[in-house]
Amino acid sequence: MNERERGDRILNFYNDKRRMPSYREMLKLFSFKSTNAVHKLVEKLITAGFLSRDGSGHLVPGEGWGQVRMLGLVEAGFPTAVEEVELDTLSLDDWLIEKKESTYLLRVKGESMINAGIREGDMVLVEKTARVKTGDIVVAEVDGEWTMKYLREKSGERYLEPANPDFQPIFPRETLSIVAVVKAVIRKYT
Image 1 (cartoon, one colour):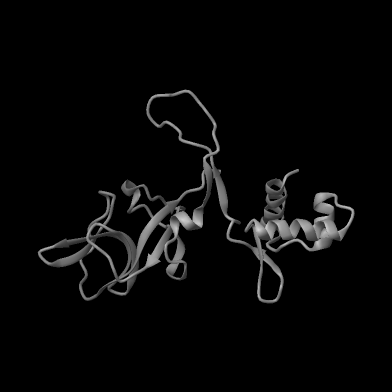
Image 2: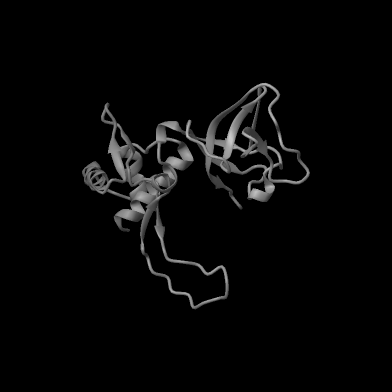
C-alpha cells in the first residue's frame, strides 16, 4: 500500500467519523506493529501536504486533502478511443473557490432556474461580492425576500429574471440588494 492509498484510508476514516484517527486507530487501520511506524507515515503525509497540524499540534487536513486525480478528457460528441492517462491532481477548492472567506454553499429550492441547469436539490457555490454585472446569476434580497435569478437591466432599472418560462421576472417595488454571485453548481447523481 502506497502513501496515497494510506492517505485515502485516512480520508475515508475522516468522512465516516468526522474526525482524524488517533495513532492507535492508525495502527489498526494500516496493520502497523508500532506507533513509530505511524509517526513516520504521518510525517510523510505532512511533508506531502495531505496532513497538517493545527496550533495545538493536532492533525488536520492539509492543502492536498481535497485533491482528485485528473485522468484526461471524456468526449461528449462522437466516441473516441479510450486512453487513461493521469494528467495531474486537482483540488476542487482551488479550482472553484477564489475567496474562501466570502464563499459558501446554498441548497437550491424551487425550479425557477431550471433552464440555466440549476435544479431543486443542487448546491450552488456563491461568493459574496459587491462586483456584479448584468447577466450574472445572483443571490438577492428583493423587497425583503431572498431569491436566486439572473440579474438584468432595462431602461436603467435592475430586475431579476428566472430561467424558466413558468415564472415571471421580478421588478423590485422598493429594494433590490445583490448579496452574492453564483460561481458553480454542484449536483450529486448517486
